Image 1: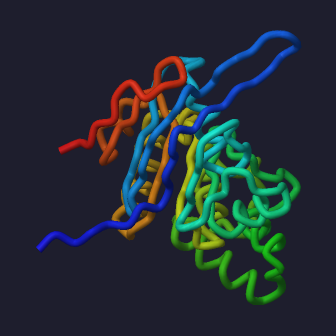
Image 2: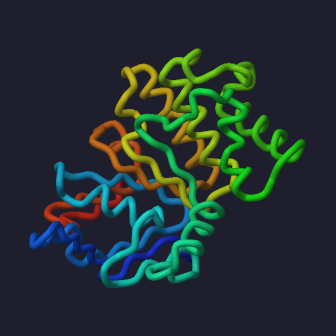
Length: 232
């Protein structure tokens, strides 16, 4: 008996056009992608192919010019800024190549930041953040500042921060790009662990190791899907 897996993020003929003066740039030319719950997807392609634009739309940081984006069961394509911000904060987790940590805050305080915007504070916030720090192996670094951590440890803080709101999708932008090979491998192991726990992961990357470990590889070229292959 085959169990149906729900669609968690679906793009339907999504385009994105930018205007710079009189110049028109078609960054996405009509994208159809259906991400299933629990998938681990690598998004690849040459510079300028539309990867960042696609990730921005999937992350509700930007809207498509035309087409539809259904996240969960809600069409978020043309939501107003306030509503889109609420969706980002409650349904999505972001992991960045440059970590994007606040240098003046400790590990635990950095992890707590998204909870502040969700109106969760005090002991409840601290308990969630401590649990996430332990989950990524930083239970003994709670009071350290980012500059006291290695690159791999800083990325673990970023991953913990992305998990505190229990997102339905994790979006990662070149998460191993600033790491040495050993630290990068440790971060990939952590992503594999999260995927094994049921997290849906969308990752823009140039890293062939990620490509090989992911379930599915979507390659873009010139704003279009060139290939969409499920591994194995």
